[in-house]
Length: 109
Image 1 (tube, rainbow, N blue to C red):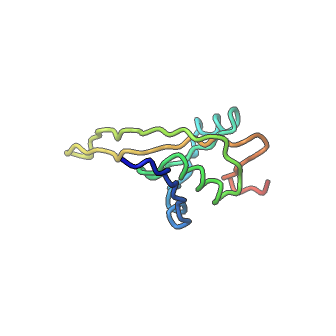
Image 2 (cartoon, one colour; image 1 turned 60 degrees about the horizontal axis):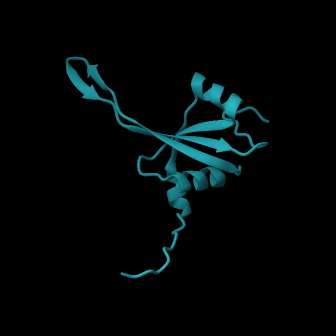
Image 3 (cartoon, one colour; image 1 turned 90 degrees about the vertical axis):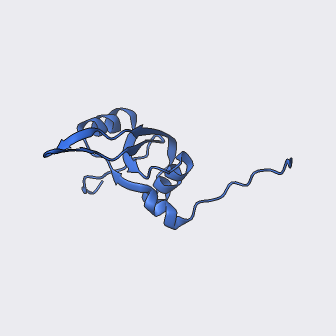
C-alpha cells in the first residue's frame, strides 16, 4: 500500500468548453438569479463540480463562489402510440461571488 499524495489533474480547455451544454433560462432561473446571484446551466452528465466551476470561470471571466448539482431523472412520456422516455439531465446551480454578474439577454451591461 503506497501513501503517495494524490495528484489533482487539471482539465484541459477542450473538455471545459464541452462541460457547459446550455444556460437554463426560465421563470425559476430568473428568480434565483435575482435573489441569490446564482445561474443555472445544463451540464454533461459526467461533469464534476470542479470542472463546472473551472468552465464557468474560463468561459465568462467571473468568480464562482460555489456549485451545486442536481441529477434530474427523465420522465416516461407517451409519444403517439408508443411510450418513450426523456433523457436524464444534470443541472448546475452556479453561485457567483458578490459583485459578479452574467447576462444572457444579449443587452449590453
